[in-house]
Image 1 (cartoon, one colour):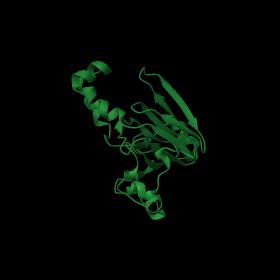
Image 2: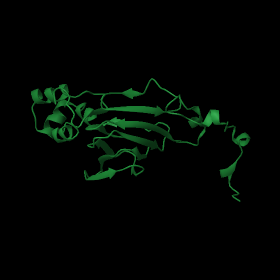
Image 3: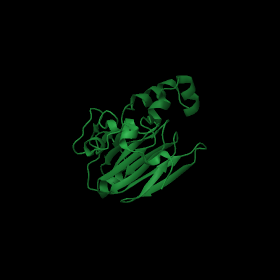
Image 4: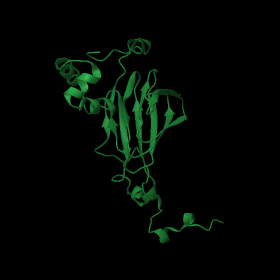
Length: 205
């Protein structure tokens, strides 16, 4: 038997362990924060929808379920307050992790495969297959945060970006104008993928 406090009763810690309190269903529970686009869907299991999460020891955990349609991708991003475990439920996904030395480590996942992204490191995912991918992401913080790499970089002052990118102010304005600052899902703009999957490329690609 364990003599530590790991196995305390619900009464001891003031928690409700009933199924109604601790079972969450993505098919039933909905959130105004959920995102649905032609390229993918994002469903949150956050504290407002699942209050039991707030009873866990800090920093807690949280989870989300998302899909990637064929020839689509999830924007490069990082989570400043939590590590992430990314697991493919069905379909497949590819992507990469970028470390602090700007090395890119690619990954390829099939059904029930998973990988881990350490807190603060940029990563991305895409689906270049012709079957929709369903993916589960679990975080080691009830509020891991999400920082989108490209839009955040483009928020830097003009002089900093002009020097870093080697462009003038006019070109920089054009780049900024082409970026949707809050887009999580997008086409991977790969003509070969659209041809392989017999899909029409999105307008403007």
